[in-house]
Length: 143
Image (tube, rainbow, N blue to C red; front, top):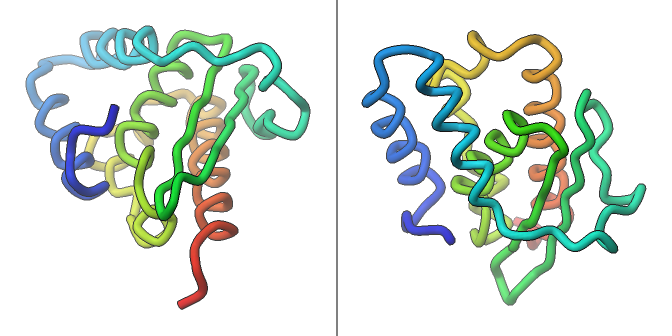
């Protein structure tokens, strides 16, 4: 799923893609379309331990370690939140835990997400991002 070599390159590629759109309605639709392409999320993964607190919508995240790399799957019952999940996975999925931990989320400002999302969606996005960083911190070797 990940095409860019690094999380930084993924953030840059997303910024360039978003520059193609003249208005926020088109950007929202692009985010929603990204969410529609998320892989299936098994029902048995929808457990309380995997549910992210702080999101207005229902959001579950599952991760597994494959060698040095962390793989994430996530799902939401809301279209825009599914798209935000897709954005996060594009940047952080299938990366080493240390790279995830060390990658600043400047895409929030670069894409204008912090300015254009409702406060509840922004809080949810930050909760999802926080969970990814928490998992990476737990999985990263000590430096």
